[in-house]
Image 1: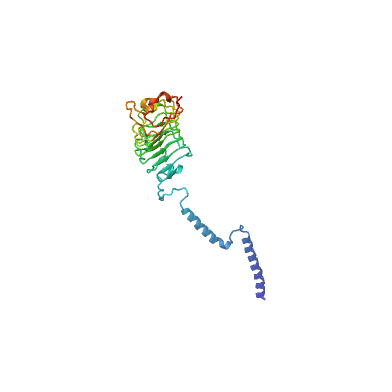
Image 2: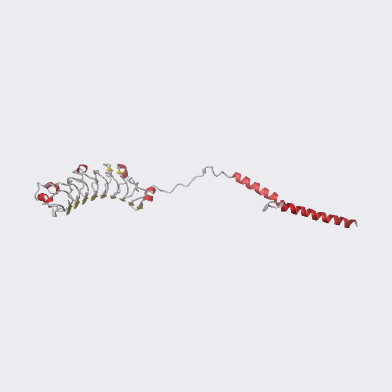
Length: 283
């Protein structure tokens, strides 16, 4: 009987205790761990926090060595321009190109047309001795330092057409073609002997300028363009030699003097050494 009474009292007590434990677990924040697992959770969390504190702050400078950058000596120019083996093409560059770009050492051909380059200095080509052709057509060049091309002993073709030049610098002696069409050149800006030493020059283009006289033309010239200038006269020594009646200038096959004030029919003795008459006004 005593055992029965003890059992009757014990069972309700166990049921009530179990209910209280269940109520406590249900009162935890949703998503939180039951009480029996909290000790392990807090232990893991504490370890994680200590590990994070052991890491270096994000704003501290990283003193670890960085790998050296790739070789990019000529990278700026070759980003703006097209660089091929021996050739650099810088045409209508955007943003505006206002100075001669730094060139790779082996550059032989430079095409920098239709930009806004204003000046050529002696340092621009001081270290580029391999250049054979330079084209600055369509820029805003108004000044070229006198020694800018002096070291370019291999230069054969030079175009300064469509710029704002009022005078010419000293030119390389190995030039075969020189183009200065559409500038502001006057006779005082072009020395009478500017082309005298250019013994290999075959094409000379000085059209659409403001020249008042024909400069001294090398014997090697075959094509000469002087149209649309202010030339008012020619002499017997302009193309021929007044003291040599047997002199013939057979290499000069094309001369343009059209668009000038000069009346060529007034100077018949000035063309006797030539195999063709100049193009121009005869009446």
